[in-house]
Image (cartoon, rainbow, N blue to C red; front, side, top):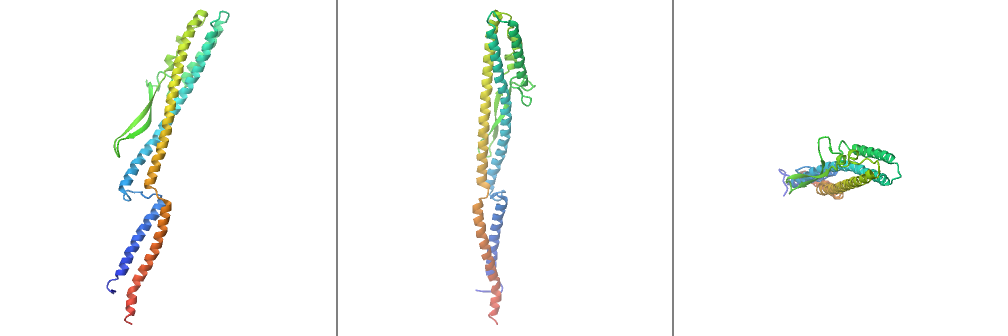
Length: 282
């Protein structure tokens, strides 16, 4: 039934057009921003999860920086420790040569003193950003170990978060390899024999310390690689939940534009209906 008081066809066509325009705006916004869910009103549950994961991702990126600092600090100390092992090996060679009667013990001791100074210099210089894992006082404040942030552990969705650290202890070569006061000065074969036992103990201490630093360095490297992969996986998960599927959005945009054109035509036809009714009375 047609009426000149109410154009029901136009009302329905207008309502349909408004709905299509609303959907069209939504698709165009998701394409322009790249986000299918960019605000809480788009999907409160998914948005909440995404924001929690984004905060964790930011935390893990900070952890990557901490681990990089840790790797650099331990790498410097490890390189110094390995260099000290080489110098101690050279000192051991000199002490072994001093076991003979027909050698110049004074000259050998002079060479040993030079290498002792090199060892002490390495211990003093093996610091990164003020932290020296070869020294007795690691950071100038009496510390004997350094903690590097390694992970964030979350219990349940939106639950408590705790920080996990990797602690690296100082090997303290400054006191455990004190050659200046604890290595016998060579003057003859007897003193050379005493020095040989002492340098062997120092060498084992240096080897053990270098091995410990190498193990810590590898642990930090492995953790850094894990955190990097974990961050990538979390970013991918957030992307799947919130980012726009461009192929799907493009197809939907084309469909909505077609629907919009048809709705406009339907509204035009509905608006022409009263004029057609008037023609019946001519």
